[in-house]
Length: 177
Ligand SMILES: C[S@@+](CC[C@H](N)C(=O)[O-])C[C@H]1O[C@@H](n2cnc3c(N)ncnc32)[C@H](O)[C@@H]1O
Image (tube, rainbow, N blue to C red; front, side, top):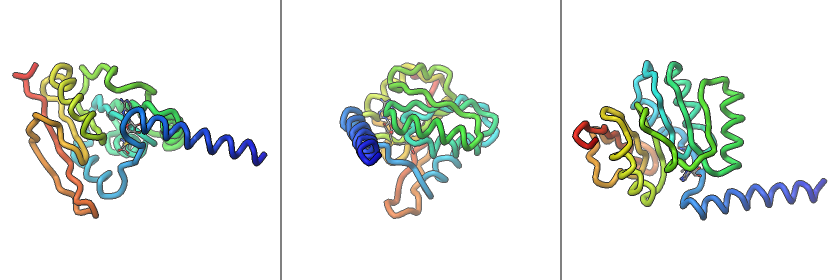
């Protein structure tokens, strides 16, 4: 029994550690003021689709689904342990949202109305290009902490939290298509 628990703990730590190393970021969740600050940017009546890139443990995904009950909400998460936990979290919360275990760079975002992400500078650079080529005109993007290189936000919010976190809102312009 103790050995099984030990193996399980090693597997969980090893898996999270491996995906953090391979994809450049841990599944650190958006909580508290930051969660509220991100969610409040989206009008509650939106029908979506809203895509969350790197949905981690599912905190933000569930909060988005509660805030926008009519929207189609999809999270992409590559790391298996956070992915499994988020699936359970979505089920237990009883909200309408889906989580896919997928690299979001391979996801088709061409129908997106909102895109939400909390990632790291390297991913933001790559996403800046993907968003230019793939997102439809009028789609809005919310990024938390890290800005999108080469894009000018339509709104920047500084939260009143310990880290003075910034939330950026962008809009895909028609001329970029
Ligand atoms: C800082 S966490 C944010 C979690 C969640 N979005 C939140 O705000 O609570 C970033 C997540 O992105 C995931 N991730 C990083 N690169 C990814 C990729 N290419 N495809 C899918 N998920 C990825 C990581 O595994 C991690 O769980």
